[in-house]
Image 1: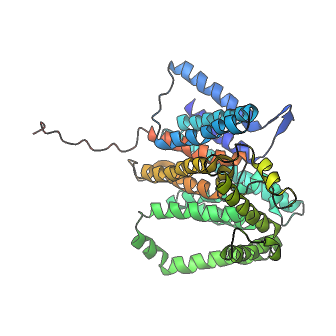
Image 2: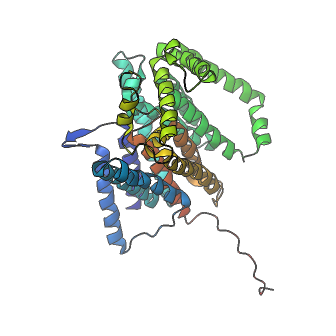
Image 3: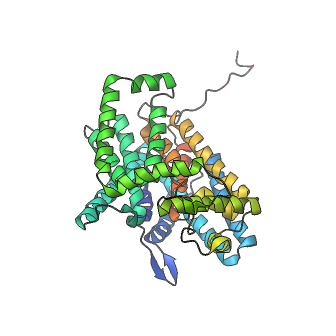
Length: 419
């Protein structure tokens, strides 16, 4: 049963990357059905065992629940009962996902099953998506893929963990292929998330020593090999119109931000619509935070607040950051809870990595990368189910690690009467 659940919980995570939804009075996704069945599986497991699992929960779990429960309470007072109920159902769903992941990844064996299923599944999705995209003549404009485009960078992150441990002779080829797909996707947020999450994984894997890290990087074969690989990937990427545009607009973002002022008129700048949208919304967020600092305008009231601020601008649409959405809708109270949850997740993932009994670390390294990966990608991604998925995924894994029977136990302190 546990082996089945570890694979099943990975399938639940994969389901949200498909972006499928159906309207039957309300909007439903395959993910919703899978989570409902997952809850029944947990009940069945408890019936067979004759007891419910009692899990120790780290502080990140309570911060996760507190941040999203606060959104429900905020909605009840500022947005209405309907929004509060909708938010509450979403919280229950993702807390259930976290419990499903926790129960099914407590042992190193089942954690391997979970990550193997996630790795193979997201790899298949990434490759099939790329082949379909190209075979239909869409050599650029990956943005139309929806949630699937974020699978490229997640695939690369998981491939990096396999490569670092040297578990397969083909690991380096798979990793380079996954990085290439990430670059060609043109998703700047995916680039940043992969660089941050992968960088933290490498830093932790090398023992968290800056001197050791620099010594590794400065080896001739690493310098020349890494430079050649990066240069080749960038050179190929620059041949693709859409990817080249992303590099150009990154420089424009720097120019805009270096001259940023809350009172500035952005119409004079020539840049992409995507960049203008982010900067218009940055001004909107700052001004809304000044007007409603502590509790925001109310959960789910983003579009209403946006229409009241400037209903005519084509750039004023959805949030481009989950941090931004928390600030506008839930004020600094919600934002602080959200940042604390991610900060604690990153801290706990690094701590748990060093509590393993063996040198294999049984997939704990991926949890380190996922923690920073999720925190960074949500900095550029706002208002969708993937935002809460990334946090629920990390929280579930951390709860599972907290209850892992194979982690190191603190050494007992000698009592005064022991001599």
